[in-house]
Image (cartoon, rainbow, N blue to C red; front, side, top):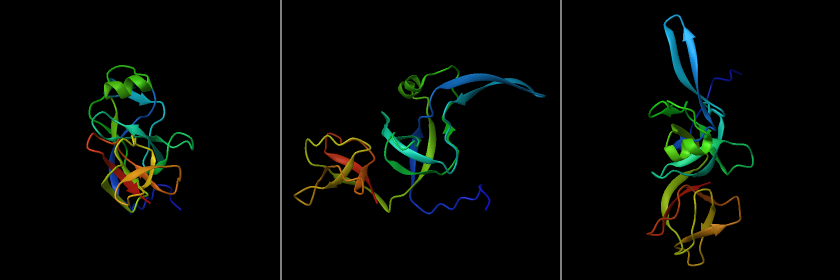
Length: 165
């Protein structure tokens, strides 16, 4: 089987990728030298990604799945693309705080993604597992990993986006 064949059938979610430290390296070719960013843990098309948070502008934040860094939400649908190329070296934390992250479409494993109402004061954060609350109308945190996953932080209006398995 050809490793370059990908069949994506799920819901594609726009995310931002954290790919570790970024180094600027000089490359040379017959057309001249240029500086390019190199990512410590680059995400490539088809690789499994985990949800590790949410960006200040509301995008789910993903990185390569390691089995211990967050719930797996799907596969990189495409090669991450920068909004602008970094012009200096960054640590992972600096890249996140500076917003030097690449956009990445993630083909999720969810059958549906929707905004829902969270139980007031529940403090749901991206990556938390959630379930229906006792009232049957709002959602609350869960320890059951087979339940739904929050894809955003609970906002001041008690709304949160969830992925439904």
